[in-house]
Image 1 (spheres, rainbow, N blue to C red):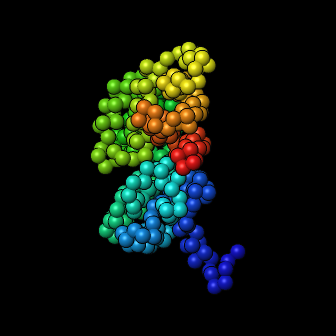
Image 2: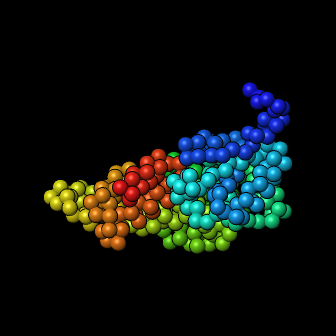
Image 3: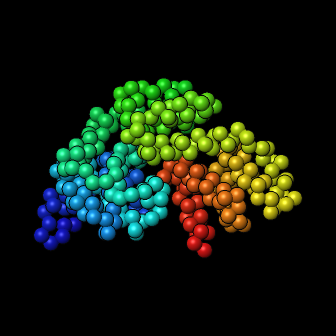
Length: 303
């Protein structure tokens, strides 16, 4: 229903730009980006450059004619989202397409670069959307165990778009899945500098670290027996979490690490907290294990 004085055109324009919270991020960014690319502006009221960049982004998004939408996230009011996406300074801008972050930048940039960025993101639903669909298909192959086919598809995507962070991350994970950790590291180190801090590559780096740990993981049954004999054996609990994660039991691994942190948060230079962050970074931002785990860890930290 239109508000007093609104035309259908102005109402549609208002829908292009939304203030988004932790409660609505999944719906207004992750899910909405499956239909149209979403540009997310992470800002704060005290941030001077944000006051210039935000309005310029909004203007460019309106001029794009519906090919892209914009979500505004106040980092002071939504610290959990900021932590999940590793927002270290503001303004930070991410573009989401097909449920994944696909591009972004930090700091204020000139108006011409803003317009070019918005156009590039808007075009993803056209020709660029074909690459996004290819990434999605490769991810499905990887999930179903067709690792070689997935790796070949990710490599082909990089042949078309050498800065495709999602394809780089996928190729790293494909090599991890084959057990070729050296090749996974080589791919990760060969990523262009401009996407080296992209969420997909940060996640791939965390997954590689966990894969290296998995090679040294002990038998789960032996570690459980050690804990039954001595529940305060924190090293055994940490090793059990490592073994559980290596076996694909991520939720159980997180639960053991949370229990370890609850017993002694400072043990081994806060090893439990660091390991939890590594696991969370290896998961997708909207993964329920990461979301719930971060929430529980925050409750323990501030208890």
